Image (cartoon, rainbow over all chains, first blue to last red; front, side, top):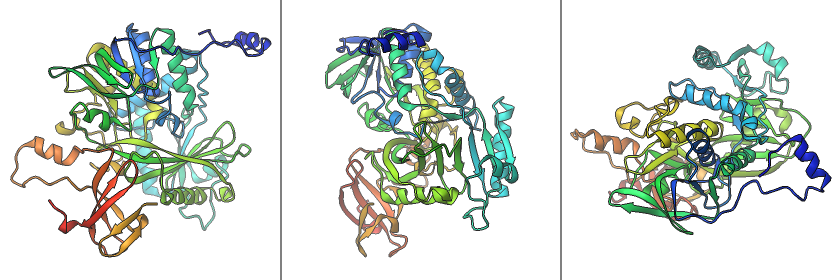
Length: 418
Length: 88
């Protein structure tokens, strides 16, 4: 568990890289903990890290049914941004971006945060006005947002289709310069290592199959490696939140949908930023290995399958070519899918549940990866203090019955539409 | 690609259909005044990992709404009926 530095690389290089120590221990579960976090993805591991670091709660276990970061942490398109305009979301995602900016130093682990800028291309005056409003809300909250007309965008993003036959004409683009991408696996591993250094037990291959009850209070979890008692049980299992909540008799405003992502064969530097196509739901960036990372729309029906269908493959690739015709002869290297917690308003839930002893972090829709550090920070705060941090105070479960939905896209209670 | 059995047209591609939603949801009586019941109707879903009854609209076929039972983990289909004939 050594400190990583240029010196440690040199020293380990000289000894043939055979003496690197494990990044985290592999302990057997203890009979009881102060807090048990279910889900060893970025959110669960970040929660454990901040519980230990910010609140001194170190008698914590993170239980993961598979391997760390094997769910949506390892399946997203790695985009990090804070371009939200609804009260609640705006401040939360900006806190997250600020944590991202210092995360590699914080964790002593290179999460390869690359603030390469996030362009959202628009195709009509109306779409431009809506984006300008978003930019104004962001600026009034002290968040960077810029606007460019077509002439400037032709210089900045020369590979897009500006021809007279373009499917949707490009009128201009919105830019958040501080946004970018990060290495998704490294985020899980960095938080895991940081949490482990402070005494957190990270237990893989340990699936939660039920809860231990004391009358109507949850006092632990039943797992495939035996019962584990805990003062507080915290779920961070987005994609399967309904599944685990239903074992506690909790019904939620969530549907699980499948979202696909794609990577092409590697090419030389071509796409210098994250670019979002306003004509369809499509986004593209280039990984450090050179592969173009593409993402699109949900498949559109309830699914836990973690694999997608061909109609959305076709739709996504059509969008890619409509935006950047030069991609037409590239070959796809891989494509995969993740199960998304799609909430009824498109915003997450980080809150204490109505069942005593149970806390929930879920409902991340498309937005989970960029939220990872702030999600962990706010969830840890909520668990430790028993009340929400100001930045997640609006992410309650009862907002739906109280009429305080945070519907960023204005789509109404249709999970597949967010 | 899902292949969905339409009771009128037979086995057809998913792309001919539009997805509706959970077909077990029932609108409360319009005289219902309990907000909790309306809240559950609008927002709460069982979201099962397994068999799921759901509406599909055969929008570029016979334009009938059908109820399909499908496993959300494996996509196995267990049958479909016209929505108007589905047991309430």
